[in-house]
Amino acid sequence: MAGLRIDTLTLFPGIFQGFVQESILKRAIDRGLLDLRFVDWREHAVNRHGSVDDAPYGGGPGMVLRPGPVFDAVEAIGAAEPREGLRRIMLTPQGAPLTQAFLCGLARAERIVLLCGRYEGFDERIRIGLGFEEVSIGDYVINGGEVAAMVVIEGVLRLLPGALGDPRAAAEDSFMCGGLEHPHYTRPPVFRGMAVPEVLLSGDHGKVAQWRAEQAAARTRDRRSDLLAQLRETRDGGTQ
Ligand code: SAM
Image (cartoon, rainbow, N blue to C red; front, side, top):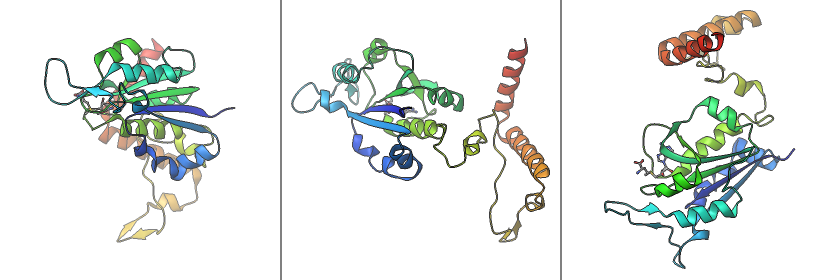
């Protein structure tokens, strides 16, 4: 089976250079699990100076990405229309908050297209006319969609079968079952007076599993009671 293709449309493809050459991501690309492509908006600039943005109508600070170059770029990669297996995502602080459940859905796609904004963002007609899903990585504003695209790419990559050495690693992560994961310890057994919990050294797999489940539940309750409320809602909604 061909790997998951992700097209990232950006004004700054160079930002991704180091990102694709390291660690798990590089291995996934080398092994054909991921096919990452980057398109520079400037390939579709409106003039020979490479312009893709302009001042906002109505005045005000900053520049806005023009619709022409964005539509042309999306059409050139064959992603102007929605279709099965294709997920088309515009990165914007005004989008739906990114969640693990959303990433799980993306990991089942055949192809993903990510639009990275810059400056004041996209001309509104890009949003209206292309009809991409709008996704935010959190309630704050960063300079451009590139870092947000990296978040999506890494989040999806962890979920691709074969991407991580041990497939249990992603399955046991925080949020995969709704709550937070248990704490981890490694050598040495005592570090600056802090000892590893006895149960983890016991070799008793049943007790270890029980301790981990209790720790995960306590962490979720103490730090993210909102997640428990969501879990209850899903469970109650599912049984009605
Ligand atoms: N003026 C816009 C607003 O207030 O909604 C913010 C524009 S931001 C400086 C430029 C680009 O960065 C956006 O078009 C988007 O692609 C990206 N961006 C910034 N914050 C983001 C976030 N929280 N999630 C996803 N993308 C974000």
